Image (cartoon, rainbow, N blue to C red; front, side, top):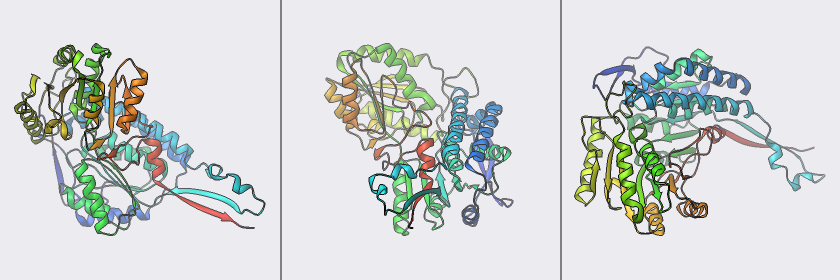
Amino acid sequence: MPLTETPRLTLMVRNPYRGAPCGEVPMATSEDVQRALVIARQTKYQMTGKERAGLLRRVAEGLTRRKNECARVITDESGLCLKDTLYEVDRAVRTAHYAAIVAERIDEDTTGRYRLDAEDLPAAPRLKVITEPWDLVVAVTPFNHPLNQVAHKVFPAVAAGASMVLKPSPKTPLSAFLLGRILEEAGLEKNVLQIVVNDRCPEIVRQLVVSPLVDMVTFTGQREVGIQIARWMVSEGQSLKQYVPELGGCSSFIIHRDADLPRAAELAVKGCFGNSGQRCTCIRRIVVVEEVADEFVDRFVRAAERLTCGDPYDPKVDMGTVISEEAGALIQQRVRAAIRDGAVLRLGDKRQGALYPPTILDEVRVTSELVAKETFGPVGPVIRVKEIDEAVEVAKNSEYALAGGIMTGDRALAQRVAKDLAVGQFSWNGIPSYRTETAPFGGFRGSGNGLKEGVVLAAESMRRIRTVYEHS
């Protein structure tokens, strides 16, 4: 859990809205990180899968009891509004419940899946397929969902019975340590989870991922960092360990001429501005067929104008800050560059520190940096196209392949577009960011290597498979 020795240093965390300190956590030195790796590697779960399921259900109960406290901590460190953070706690509760179900099933014998015709031969040896936890998993999580991103690493590890060293973002570590305490209170065995954090991210991440003690690395964060992790592992001869990267996206939301425009506008607001626009599956491009573009944009602007942006602690506020003033400045820089490229500002772009309100641009060029890269904030860029085939080409013109969606009454068209885009997840008449906690999640190309997260597959990935033949 948190470092076993009294920390010599602490990391101060600041609230993005107020700019004031909101908490502190132990600062891990290189020696602390190595000790955490050794301790976690040497420690094995003694609890059975069913016992771990009971633990996870107690964690869900603890999160539910402390829902307001957890939401407040997330708001403290991230600046996200309480509406968003209360919802995040609800998601973490569901994640714990589903992980409990996985834990109950994780030790089931899977040998039958592999017994085909060859095993029926009289002289064939008896086949036994064994799954067991990896000895050590390293997890690195980002700032945008400080609780549920951690839950999506830690809870599958508990379900799988795998020891873990977790490194949360230094911008938002408070939720991770709070969740660690809730796990301890629920009965988590000592030392199977170690939490380390340091503001020198490249150094600590490199130390973790290249350690020969580590069997598996699961990472969620920026594409460039995920690629760097792969390079580090290659350079240190550690490239063969399992690596599951979830590296972000640049999702397109296509509005066809037959779309339900009132619903499309409301969904666009949710998909662009939820969580202050800081989701890897947020809408980054709204691609609209010209025939309905004027009406859609008018509806989109009116719907977004109803949102209130401000004090994240006000329960009536719909959107708080982005993660930092620097992040807000970068978003604004890209918005203004898009305007210089010919985009029309329809709403927003009035930044106050880390507070950047919902912003809508029309007639954005697909070559604009705003939509060519993952602009991690509350911006709704509208790109106009003449026909659906052009919309598909615009959506495909990206280094990412995480998520996408289309609004249309034509099911066959939606299926064709989903096949053409070939993204990790796709929504018909829904936002690209819709997901459940259990379904496979992850993208291709610049979004990931095709290995998936989601509670079920994440837990399975944290176990190795061994094959045993019993010869008579």
